[in-house]
Length: 383
Length: 152
Image (cartoon, rainbow over all chains, first blue to last red; front, side, top):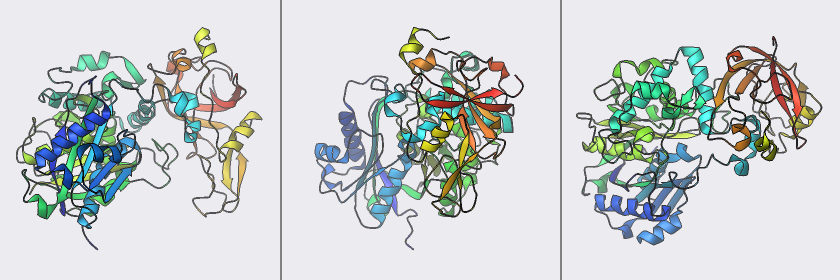
């Protein structure tokens, strides 16, 4: 069986500014990020022959390919489940390039969630039938669904709001070091956290990600070609998607064990394909639309035991110099919420050695997509 | 709590599909029924066409006692749809059924079937609290389950 292990590399990354409100359209932002990523890689747009995106993206590959001047495209893919698909874009391009279906792949995300429509504000007009079991009862938004899991996790394992604050603080502290982050120079204190307004009790304002305008993109080529590119390659070491048996939508209340979500499924495959394990991960970028996703993911990806995700955050474990520095650009909670794509690019920066919160000598990085929904993850490795 | 806003903006009603329709039809008769496989007798929820255990397409709807326990709960705060924002401090709960603990239903804990979603004091909610189903018919004719503490 052919292995994808280190067969491809991310050789270019690009991003637009992040803000609550940007004047440009989503399509324009997407093209800006993609052109920047290709420029970073030193590859001409006409060489691009593969695109991968994930749902809830408004800019189709047809439009993007035309706008940037791509050549003939021989592979394109759109992964389902919104933020669960971020890392799968890299996975699909890696598979396509490793098997000779294409040679230069672009993955991207463009959003105007800050100034554009907020998808959960008007759930009445987009009520899919699975929602008949949840939304009529006022479980309206992803925040409500994750808060339900958080309360149960607190009850079963003694997870506390201080644990969730540790997550929010680690992300905010890294954003305070990152001039591109929306929360640059905007510190967070425990008092601010504990006295902020509720969004869905037990989750408060600072347990929720930012609403952001912005776009990001990355360029993937074969490992062989990567050696001739402008930047130090960052190898795609292992990838996985995860849709657990008997899963349902955003959360898994109907599974035997709702606190073991898609991360557990993705993790089993991810580690099986890798040369190293959780103990060898130098830095992690973990999808953080909501703070409880971090303890749940720490458990799912094997950084601690079942139920230990809250306690893992104690003693500065997630901060620079801690056991597992996370979301070193600030993450969705404090850099920008661009459906997790900023986590991919931040992983690349860490392994290039160019992060604004650089982990010394980082050579391995886990990046994850949204937990709760069918998800994906990628392990990145420096040369 | 019913003010002008709640009257103009009704609560969301279930968007029913073929698989879920019997649940709501039984609810309209005041019965809590869960889909069960006719071949292997396994319960399944949410409803679907085929049994995940034995792949049989034959199913029946088994009546439940309506007793359960609160598995978890939340208090959503704005920004919310107007009908929900008009009931500040309302709760949403997940109930695990006494008859089948792995069958869990999202609902609301209230003081009486027709009472507002914020009718019960928040401090009365507790994981593990015993609850009993009751049904209420919304203004548009949909009947939905509500949950009441066994010891009010």
